[in-house]
Length: 283
Ligand code: MG
Image 1 (tube, rainbow, N blue to C red):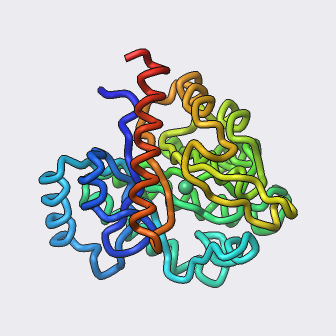
Image 2 (image 1 turned 30 degrees about the vertical axis):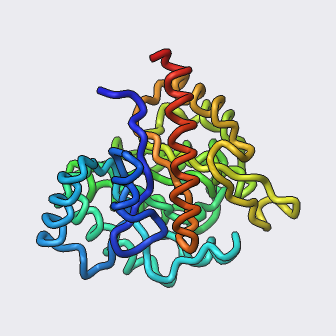
């Protein structure tokens, strides 16, 4: 199998990813799909979508959950609105996560990705056991579907994330490693964290960023095109190889308000990754 097949984060009718036609035009063969709206998650739509993917020669490597009402406007608002941790929406989003997993199954996809939200860094936090139990329940549901859950990195330090995965204790809980998030959230270092959690990484976002000049953990860093920020693209890919990761490299560049620029920057990231692949694997 091809090592590091390049992919891109894509959307059908919801989310910040690029449209399928853009993926096709760029010659990219894998995508992570942002989950479509509820009314599109049907067998009929899945078949329609699979036919289009087959025509374009594109494979879905993961379906990513997204929920109404999520906002990344600031780190504080992200903590309040994103994923399964916020209490006001927790129950309904657990149900929806299972529905999204079932839709992914209709698409033949074995990996479901998710920002669960901010897991308390202190295990003595009264909310911690409930979050562990919730993720265990979801993992057990996915397991019956023959699926894995991939947690998006960014909100937790590497050690907290590894302890959380151990506390959940199922064998289908892994990591979607997003190196830029560690910089954007001001929570870690992409290279040293990857060395720590590499054995749990089953999918990757190629995204880049620069750290905030304000207060880390309070003010956002800035997302920039892959290869132009503080991740260090070559060292990142070399470290992926070192930890034994040879799965998809999925480019994430979320500027849907500027589709032309988005397409151009994804094209540049694609070229950079292909050049680095050749250099690193010597092909
Ligand atoms: Mg990401």
